[in-house]
Image (tube, rainbow, N blue to C red):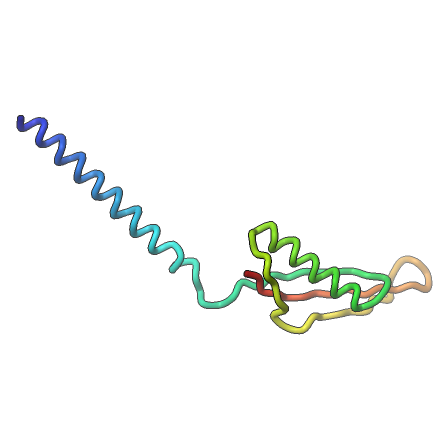
Length: 105
């Protein structure tokens, strides 16, 4: 009888420790991951048509990346940055580059 009782006691103790550890990890993981600041997604776009098209491509870049991670609602975090580039290898042409920072939920 004493061997059976000791075996049950060890099993219960092991289950208690495992359950407590799982509960602590479940409660602690989101707190460790949460910094209180939003995660910023960055997207880039290039267009030979217009600066607005380069911005649209950069926004689309973020939306595609965020959707792959399960975030479907995005909004601009700050103003888009746009550069007009004149060193295109084709003579007489140039293009626009854009970069956007967005938060997504």
